[in-house]
Length: 411
Image (cartoon, rainbow, N blue to C red; front, side):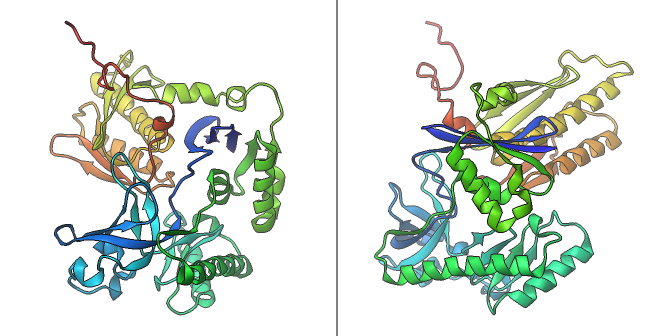
């Protein structure tokens, strides 16, 4: 059973997704300074860096945005030149262009932007110039993939690109076409405003956290959407009324005095999930360390001694760890390189089964995640797309005394 909870306060809006009573996703957005991802701007090229094949673009933020040459070329690979041209042939300082934020400012870096525009809807993603059709990999049945691809071919116009989202499975041509027409109208409005706007200028802001979660997460297998703010509950109902009327009745307004996240045990699960040591059901545990470049996870048997032999004890602990790591990567919204130091296993089949178990659990992740495999040193390597600040940044800050190193200075 899937349940989505949304808690609203004056400072932040928080969403929590529960699957069979287990917390699997958590997101936070400040009331002021909402997410920039998906926003479109008319920007001005400030500087071109031939050595990095990139340019800095002023889009009106504190720091200039970063634009790679790959994000200037045509979005369809078949229409790109065989050899990348120098960035200086494509852009000059002072040029004005329409860009979309694909990665928020992180640390000291500015936002990363692209000219490969995409506007997400309920059933599909519209890409005005991409000229290709894609189908979500999570739709695995080949007949349904073929049906959706054929439908997209008949409803798109020349040069348009369309990606059918997971939610599109089973939907009619009419529903898909209505979604596409709405996204076309949004794009045409953006393009028209861009022609008159003076850079830097914000042309389009993607929907906030509540809208995104309703659009991207709510599906027929979602039992409830519980919101503790009347205005946001009505916002969710209004969107579903237009796109999925059968699901509107699943939105519930929470009115009890006890805080929403405490009432449903979400706060308790969050507290455990964001600790540096996370206990596994058997008594083993994970040690979770975050650095700027990567995330390192160490697996330990802890209190678990097993009942058969050492190899079986290690295998069981690693299996539990694979499940928990996959869940926590989603929950913590970890991005970048991830290294897992599983306990050494002697039997090759056990190594294979643990890797498969991890891959299977990771398929539930809505963010692109790739299991690279075992390294020569026996470590498991993964990558996960990083677009936003880690959720921990909203609630934790480095200690003023140790600067986050966690060490005690002895005089």
